[in-house]
Image (cartoon, rainbow, N blue to C red):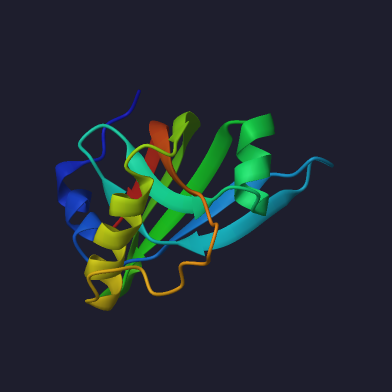
Length: 131
């Protein structure tokens, strides 16, 4: 396990998007921008059941993500690790908290009827940072 350096933790307080790379069924990478937070041990993002990320991570928990400081694009954080948990428990509250952070709205506005949200927890194994 690797720890997010103190001098990079502020990125998780900013409206910095992460680009998450997963591995598809055919072995090719798939990258998606996501909202993220950090709970002190895990980098977390939220998705919905049935999406490409969800399916890819169910098959292969290896993941990479990068974040860029919105105030200084030459400052970034790259994390490689693995998904240690994908849970529906607390996922609706989590996406609402991310909507508050990124949009300033109390509830996630793109929620669809019948959609099942999932919190994805990544355990960092290798970290690189610049800036």
